[in-house]
Image (cartoon, rainbow, N blue to C red; front, side, top):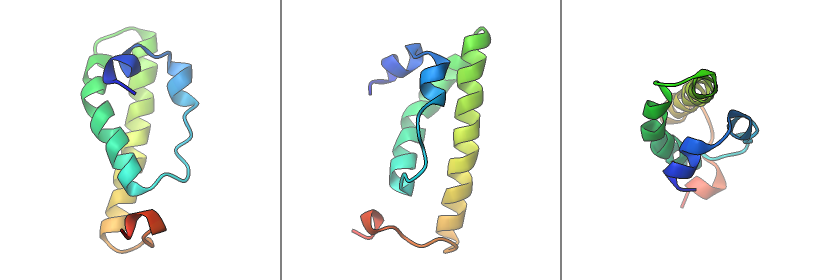
Amino acid sequence: MPPATLLRMHPNDLESFRMTGLTITERRAIFAVLHDVSKAWNEGDEMMARKLAWFKAFSTTFKSALRAYEAGEVAISREEKV
């Protein structure tokens, strides 16, 4: 999905995305795209604040999973062994 589309999305659409079951690689890709988009969410109204709150929660969860992965605390999924 293009970053411009993500920028205009309604917060409910973002909040309804399922992140369960995504690999670290998939989460890393989402984080990379949304990192730049989230900067625009810093300067907005209540809807922008909800999008930013969603991104911050996603970011925290992603970084926690990444630290656990890098520390060897979680198993590598089949998709990431390749």
